[in-house]
Structures are given as C-alpha cells and as structure tokens.
Length: 252
Ligand code: 13P
Image (cartoon, rainbow, N blue to C red; front, side, top):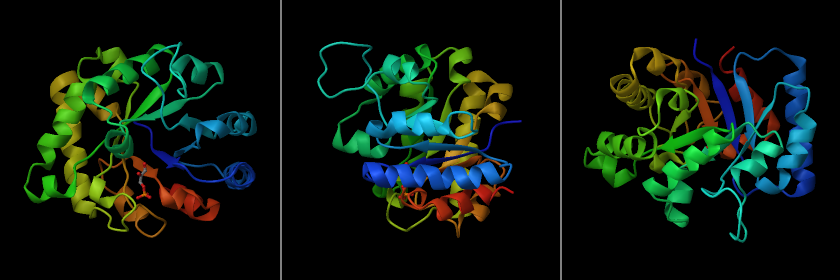
C-alpha cells in the first residue's frame, strides 16, 4: 500500500527559538500516538540540523525546501544534495511554484535537481500545479502534464518510484481558497493515470500524491478521503503544532 504523508512546508518562517519550540511541540504529539500517516517537516535550511537532531530516534522525517542541481563548488548561497544527505535529511521539496515564479526554476533545472537528489538518496517531493488563468481556460491538465513529463519522465522506473508528488494549484496556495474535494481527486487521478501510462499500474498505485493549497484542520479530512489523495503538503497550517497535528490525525 502506498504511503500516506503529511508534510509541513514552513517556507521562510520562524526564528531559531520559534523553530525549536515548534519542532518540540510536534514531537510531543507524535510521540504520544501511533500515526497512520508519515509526518515530515521542511523547515528553512538553516534549521535542518536542529530538526534532524531533535527528530533522531523518532518517526518524524525531515525535508529541505530546496537544493542546488550542482553537487559542490562555487555557487554562493546554495546548498547541495550531498550536504543534505550527510546530515541525514530524508526529503527535499522541488518544483514549488514559489521557486518556479521567484527564482525562475525551469523544467530542465528541476530535472537536474531531481536527478541530483535521487543520486544522493534524498526523496524529492515534486510539486506541480496550474495557475488560475490556466484552470479557467481549461488548460490545467496540460500544464500539470508538461511539468511532470519534462522534469520526471526521463527517469528510469527504479528512480521514479522514489518520488512523492504534490499537486498544488497555484491559485489555492496561501489564498484560503482550497481546491474542492472533487477538483483535487480529478487531478490526482489524472496524474496517477499519467504515471500508469508511462511506468505501469504497479508504479502508479505505489506513488503517493499529496494535495497542497490552503489545506487546514477543517478541510483535510474531506480532501484526504479521496481515493487518490494520499496526504497533504501544508504551508500556513503547518506553522502551529496543534493545527498541523489535527491535519496528521485527519487520516485516523
Ligand atoms: P498554504 O497551505 O499556505 O496554502 O501553502 C501550501 C504550500 O505552498 C505548501 O507547499
């Protein structure tokens, strides 16, 4: 059975002290109960060591929000997959719409980042999703198809099967407007069928596809009840331990 995952993308939020507190609070909840879903937090890279140390010997998984497509070298300000791997980081979010928009990340660059992550044993949480005009013009399936095909479909099956996908419609990110349960399921099924056509049904059935975009403690249960929605990539609602844990519990 494919994994159910709830991942928190903290984006550029929290001071060091606040991050410390939030990680501790999340761990308090996680240690108390058995969780159905795997729980991942993706703090700013500056706090990865803190998170990784605190999560040691717990089931909490740690992810980065970005990494370079290069291994080492003269790339001021960047962090690389071998660095993340050397710190025991499990996941890295790649292809987030904010990185595509503000940092001009192209399909080609993302293909390189995905390969680099996989080469160093880091599982990409690969984001895809359309903007509002693209949905309004009925082009949303094509946009998502292109994002997935161009950055991922050159991979051999053994590599592709390590990837987690996240459908994040850009119009739902940070807006308070969530995709309806029907819209989410429709796109997730479409994505699963793309994978099936390329890699076969076994790989498609094993690939976790998360939903992201104004997912919160109130709407998570309904979104996650869809057969092809395997969890969430949570932004704003992952910044408060209690709210985030309610989303984790939406599976129970
Ligand atoms: P919000 O949950 O704040 O809408 O953000 C979603 C997101 O971008 C997660 O990567």
